[in-house]
Length: 239
Image (tube, rainbow, N blue to C red):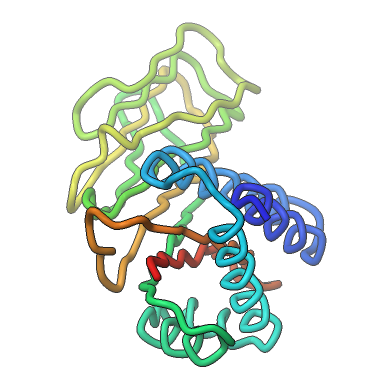
């Protein structure tokens, strides 16, 4: 099966299994971003699929699916135990393969802030630029006049007049730096603004060898009923 369709199948399967509502919608959004990141950064380095590579992808995906059904994959991914995922998958696969594993994880924080004239509000977060796939902030201007957003001292977005009732999603990936980061939000009224800050980062057990044909398989898992933590496990196969 095509890797894009396989990953989408996993996304849709997990979305259907989870509850409806805000968590459902946000997890679907993050899953889409994970797939998009995969397509942008990984797919250009993968050769066009043939029947052999398609069979390998299906074989690995089925192994990951079996681990997920047993609860093993979810537990190992929650602990970010990449060596454990590799060991368990190696014992699950009926046909031995040479591979390594990685994963993409999400970190979301949200809240409501109340900036006032001359008294901006700050949203602080830390990041590892080297591992960062994407960083976005969703802003809901419940009650806000002349809002402006700065990241690490640089103007990110500005609006004039009464901007109450508007929402927007801002990509802050390029402006995010390793270590401490700070978003500052100014308004000219006693405002009320809610936000959701999303960071998606990648982890790798070891980098695949260069100058070899790599087959990459991604498997996306949503969070459980109480935890908002969708993750994507990636398997890099070369033999």
